[in-house]
Length: 257
Image: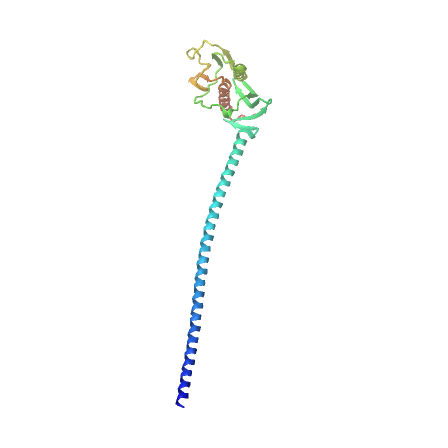
């Protein structure tokens, strides 16, 4: 009897141990599973963090690329607008104003562009309107004259040197002569006269070679056109433009009909 009871107690203890071990194993498995879950959660967080970083870097790169593209497109648009503005200002428009004078472009031939402009004369008992032509774009002339054009009753032209220049010299002097004669100003040619020989009612215009093409006022009634490399039209047409600008000052308020 005592043996049987002892055996029962032993068996009961062993069953208790097995249950305890089983419970421990279950708890350990749960802990292991929880640990795995936590590790997976951490791993997912790391992946999400790295993905966020990658996305942010991509966003920064895309933003930088977009900014660069906008800068490039903006610069290209600026260049296009600048080109169009220059084209319209210098070439695209058929008319333009320079020094208060209204010019119109006229294609005389395939190789010759003329620039016409009206001249209103209200001087020396002359009241008339004329149209004159330049062969050079007045906006591209040297424009380095710092003096004042004085209009007198006489204009004497002195030419020092040979300025044939394939016929440009004849055209250049003839244009000045026609303009001044239209203003009822007497025009003479004298290659032996100097500034000291001029009278109060006379203007002397000398044309001579120079290191660069420019118009200079030597004295009140004396002017010199310096010509470089046969740029005689550039020099004489600058003198014409300055003369017409002065004439417009005198005729201020008089409308061109």
